[in-house]
Amino acid sequence: MADKAKWSSYELNIYTPDTTWYDVAGVYVFCGVNAQNRWEAYYVGQAESFCDRFSSHEQWSPAARLGATHIHALVVQLAATRDRIERELIQACQPHLNTQLK
Image (spheres, rainbow, N blue to C red):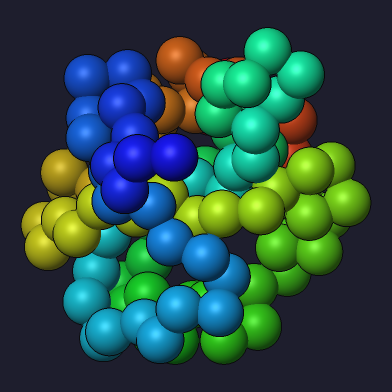
């Protein structure tokens, strides 16, 4: 698989869950490959620090049970921009575990 994935109009980097994360802000997608061999989003979120957020994320286990195997992430420093991108990705992908912003 490629090391980048296109979600909506955004290109996110692809990581495995055991990645060592940096203390940077951004938007992320918990996803896996579906039966059509395409990425499927299970949860979309944002973080002020990937390092802090992924240390014990409450949605990773439910996402993994649905088929999530990777985390797609995009560094976005501005909170207002993260809010906008997260909202757009949730609306575009309709991830099963996101109940808000749909």
